[in-house]
Amino acid sequence: MKKGLFFGSFDPVHNGHLEVASYFIKNTHLSEIIFIVTPQNPFKLPRQDNDFDKRFKAVELATANNPMIKLSDVELKLPAPNYTCDTLEFIRTNNPKNEYVFLMGSDLLMNFEKWKNYQSILKNHNIYIYPRKNKKSIPKKFINHNKIKFFQAPFMEISSTYIRKKYSTGESNIGLVPSSVNDYIIKNNLYRL
Image 1 (cartoon, rainbow, N blue to C red):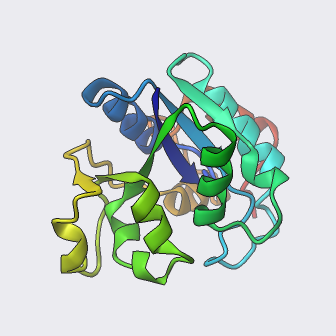
Image 2: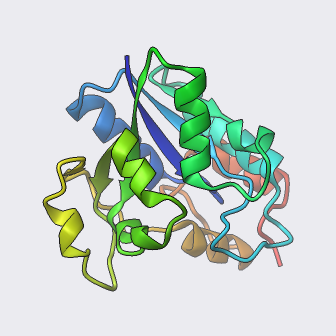
């Protein structure tokens, strides 16, 4: 079976994440999408309010009604810091009957060469790219790479950073996050200053 791996801090998960997953389910031969909630991005500074369990619960709520979307905390079980290449290797080694496709936003492709062992990712996985707002152009060597496929998935110009800011000022995020996630965030007083 061919499965899509969608890594992210999902801080918080929002409708843009779910739209991308739904697009790949409907427009590819992926049997399912696995959201891999990352404990801490090695390229970002840690934040006090970045609680893994709460983010994981929010993703669980957001994906509960879609049997084609699964959830994984695999990186929590691996040694820190977590690097995508190591997680992919662990998943592939422990599940050799499946083929795994790495789902990635076009904005991440701009700095992909800086990732630990990015060549290993390209060697062992196809990468499906969905559009994101890019400040720089994508390196030419990736544009026609035989392991990288670009998709015209829906583009929602929202980000978790934007949503956190809105929560911190008490603004509504209705329509930006699933209602179950919104209720959970409000009930647990997350992202408030």
